[in-house]
Length: 251
Length: 298
Image (tube, rainbow over all chains, first blue to last red; front, side, top):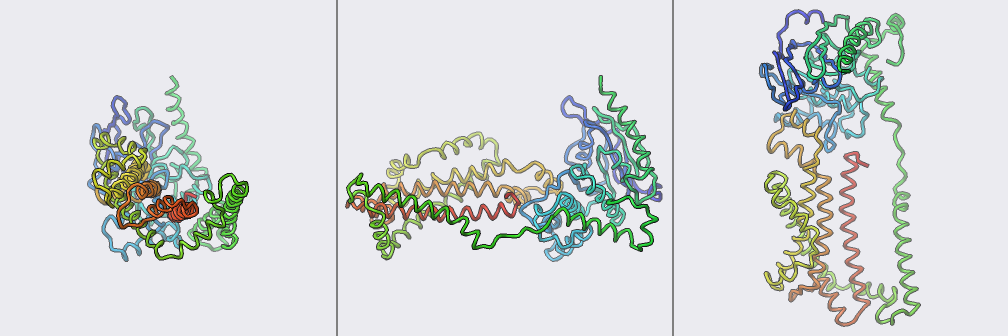
């Protein structure tokens, strides 16, 4: 994505953003920006406030200090759990955001089928969520997030609960969909290889409070493989940095 | 990736990477879904759930017959199953009996429906407004545990011996359960679903329509089921105590049979009430099971 590395417009901009819950400082003067079409991974150990950061960008929570600007753009958010609604069919779940936007029945059915096609679940529209596997449910959740037609897709460890094989395949899928749909993604994970596998940039956060300590550009050619020497090599370097950060909390 | 084939080996096969990826995804899905389960045929399934019930009935009848044979009570006080079922056969073939059933069931459904409406409104209000919950939350549970027969003296003073007196008690019996079912359903909507609702921008009415109400449905149905049981009990107590002139309900007929010392007829009506109760319970269970199956909770 070297072209995009140049100068596209920043769609998310955080300047010295802090967030505290009472006396607990979760995020401390975090500054970062995500450009249009960029895939940015936020990486950190426990307590680095990764999920807090996503909640702030999603507008689910208010910042305590600094400035957060998404220019009025729409965001959607995906979690570790697919959190599909069991009273709706798979298609019904994907249609829900469209329904809330007041899209007509015929139109939203058509759009939902397109989205299911994108996540390769054509023909599963009439199933119930519980009839699908974990990886399939997560793809339905992705289709539902895409249905929001948001400018920014936030992902909070979306593959954290999946087995390694499924996760590998979903990395390929996410990369493909990101490329085809020209998404802007802010992806939170604690898996270093996953971050290097997927991101244009990997932003490393410190823990308690969360601060940006490194911002690694990842320039390996796509499509990548999680077990390629380049990805492994850079992941090892970042892992060392992360371990040093974790060890700092031993005192 | 299933294997670590370098690209050089892939190339001669002439497959586009996208095609390969599509196959990988489809293959993984197929593996994870597993083979289709074979359902046993319906006849076998029905028999499997029916024979224990038949056996239970047979045992009850046998014990009853043995007690009769033992002459523990005179035969006119405790008649044999044969006598009772002959009487039952005669009773249920009269139009009069069905009029009684109609009176009773009309009362039951009217009372229950009113209780559902009232209970739902109260439950929705209590779950929505914290002060209201603090005020009457525990009162609702208190009412639920109150034996309905305790209300009849007051009901009779308020409404005399009328349909209203019976309805009053039936509603008091059922509404708290309905309200509590809804309240706990709303209270226990999983947090992740609420977050999804937030992310999807659900607010106000849309949030209720698309999230809170469907999510609380299982608990609401349990509340309805319990509410029905309470209203049915209250109704039977009411029909024995509050005899409205002209309305020959099941309860009144049973009371008449007792006055005539016709034990056989009294037992007939007990069986009728039992069967109606079981039939309605089966309906609620069917609704509950259908819901659980759709949601994947079974």
